[in-house]
Every structure is written in C-alpha cells, then in structure tokens.
Length: 361
Image (cartoon, rainbow, N blue to C red; front, side, top):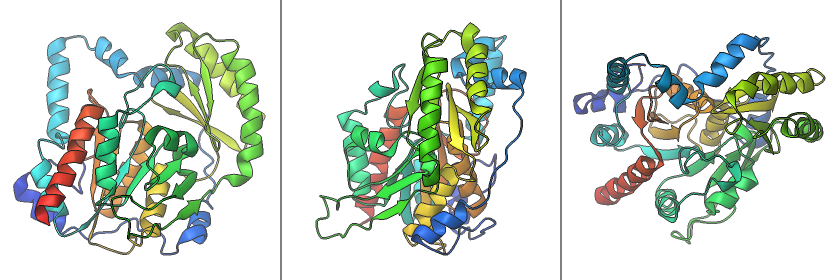
C-alpha cells in the first residue's frame, strides 16, 4: 500500500503492516504552534492558462470524459486496468484489515461525494440516516474527522455529530470534538482548534461580494458559496458554453487580490488564501493533535472523491502508513491505494470497519 500502482493482496498485508518509512514526517509540536508552523510557507502557485483551465474544467466531469471515449471497449479496458491498480476497498477489505491489525486506526472522511451524493444544489447535499449511523458507529471506536472544502459549521449542520473532529474550508478551520461520544460517556473529549488563515477573513468576505455581483448575477446556474476561509464558485449547473466567461469573470475579480489563489475541484473553482495549507496539512495537524505524529503503529484511513483529497492521499503515501480510498465510478488519476464506487459503498465499508473491530475484541 506504500507504492503507487501496487495491488495489495492478502499475502502482502504483513509487509504493509510492517511499513515504518517516514519520508515526509509531520511536525512534532502540537496545537496552535503546529498550526502556525505548517502554514508559514507561502505558495506562490503558477499563472493559469485559459486553455488548460478550460480543459481541466471539462475533465472534472467524469461523464464528460466517459462520453469522449471513442469506443466502449476501450473505456472498459481502461476501467479494468484502473481497478487493478486501485482495487475495491470492499473486495480487498480482509487484506486492508490485516494491514491495520494491532494498530491504532483513525478515520478521515470527505463530505460531498463521499458521505452524501453530489447534487446540483450544494445546500441540498444531505446525508442519509443510515450513513450518519455508520459514521457515528465508526467514531465510537476510532478517532474520526470530516475534512471538507465546505464551511465547518455547514458540514456540522449536515452531519449532526458533535463527537467528531471537523476540518472545514479545506482544513483551514479545524475544531473538535465539541461533545463527548454519547456511546462512551466516560471518554473525555479532546478539543483542538486550528485556523491558519484567520487574517484573510475580511478579504474573503469582500471577494465573496464581488464574485456574487460579477459571476452569480451574470451567469445562469452559477453559485458562489462562502465557506468562511475560502470561496467556492460552483459551475455544475452552468452550460459548458458559459464556462470560459465564468472563468474570465473569476480571474478578473481576483487580479486585485494577490493574496488569494484559484484552484479547482469537482465542477467547482476554489478561491483560497495563498498559504501552504490543504487537506494534506489538515490531516497532518489532526494526527499530531491526536498524539499520533511520532507513532509507527497508526493506520490512518482517508476516504474522499475530489481532486482536493489528493493532498491527503499523498501524505499517506509519503508516510508509508494507512490507506487512501478514492470514491469514483470512473477512472481518475489518483494517489489513493483503493477505490469505492459511491457513498453507499462508503457506508458499507464503514460498517465493515466497525464489525471487524467488534469481532476482534
């Protein structure tokens, strides 16, 4: 599980379980000091080229890529090859469980597309009661965090479980838990807080107003979402012919704000503070806050569906620990070791984690 492209079979589990290599260790400090040090380096990024951005925007739609396949047979062959390199976490669950045996498991979950389906209206991305119960059961046995590009308070409103850790705004707003696990009333909640981009709040609010006026008001279907420490410009409901205009308008607003940068997710453009912070840094901070930064007997599991989750998958690869699981029905370039097709499979995987741990005790 520590090498890209390697399929983990049951016979390999012992090797993976013994992995100890740390080529990219997280900091050893904790709390606010760790948060500040991780965010200290400025990421200057690179100039965006219009053509490449539009190509990337199109590529963010798996269906667009599927329709572009010249032959169904070629698409099937590509999918089979991809599945060999990123096998189903459900089909290979026994091997994954063997790799995690005797280790402290920690679970990190994206929200949209992972715990809830991708929907046209971001405010309607509601998780099912069955999924909520699966997450609650996992959190009762393992430290569990939601790592999302959404505003932390909004994700908490969707999930409604205060015993979790929440990393909103791509990890730029981390807090939790706010309540002890009701299934373990004697277990004390260990609260953490990390907001490395707090100084950007006024400018984020200003740019939000500018984008609403320039993009949302002019382009049908566009929606600008204020995620507190970052902004999301959704183009899921925008006609493809309008994508170029949408991109131009976003860039025109941002040219007056050199402290912000533009990145892309799944059918969304993201405006973020120009600091070196992402979901991978959030993962490192949370592992550090949990006291796991220096330990080799930890098995982090990160499940996500978006390009922004790749930063976390890369951290797991470089640590030589745990498993990254990509949620996707279509082949994508990824650093994840395993795959799941949709939120329903994520729910089933979480249930198996709980059952396996219960049977082991």
